[in-house]
Length: 167
Image (cartoon, rainbow, N blue to C red; front, top):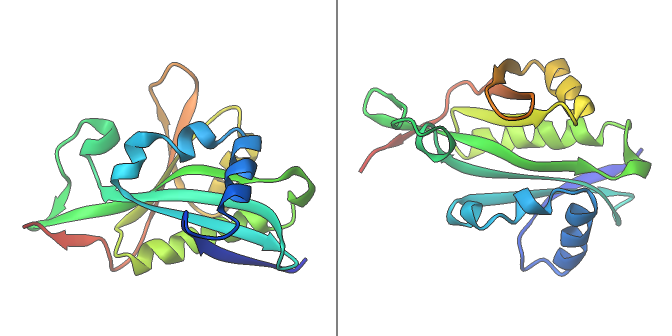
């Protein structure tokens, strides 16, 4: 299978198509939640054969601690640590089980390193067992979370990055 992964912004000429795919995969509530617009958002897109939109992954870059855990900023020395938090992820049905989801996750890890993140984090409910198994197969650490529905938190530490000097 030949596919490529690109990073798109709302200015991309096919942005409306991406929005439709994200909506069809029941991820629009997360991907376009206004709260996340205040952060550095990244949309990765998998294209099959250079044209067919096969999958996507959206993550934000933010400081570890305060945004969804009500915790103080996490620091190493005097530097604030950041993470890439995966918010929305999906592969369209005809393209599943072909390595696209893994490639999107791997690209996220590389992109997070480039952005200086300390870790990549993702949350997945029991309604997404394939996502959970993918994360485990890639070596993400896992921790059950206390939420209304059974939920797991996955974390992948990234070597050599992650500190932003606090102003």
